[in-house]
Length: 138
Image 1 (spheres, helix red, strand yellow):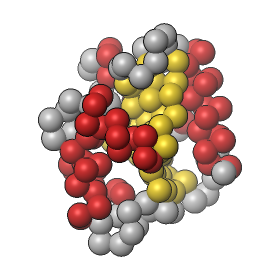
Image 2 (tube, helix red, strand yellow):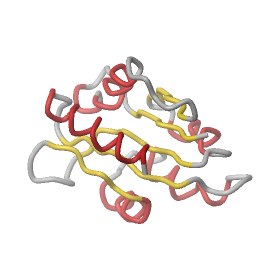
Image 3 (cartoon, one colour):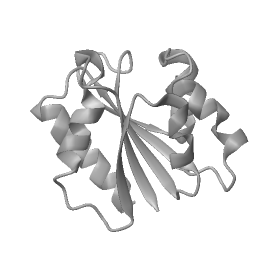
């Protein structure tokens, strides 16, 4: 099983890109082996969603990765390095990714993240969808 986990909350404009992409992807015909999940702001409560997955694609709003609004694709090694530098959610995504290898009962899934820099406008949505389709077909 492959999973797409959209992270964030609609209650904060600077954290709404993940839930907005979840709404958009819920209207898409995704491959049968892909599960779409609204991860909200659950932090460590997301850990069980990684266990047993072949791969996990995270979608979240980010800041400081690009000089202008856009979408950045962070592969697993880049994502793990970036958590210490860019994610300051205390016990949020950065901590979750650091502790993941210690708590997965099976193997840690392949990880990547689509980070949406700036708001989710039509251009960023299209970029995110294009990158997501490439990741799912790889």
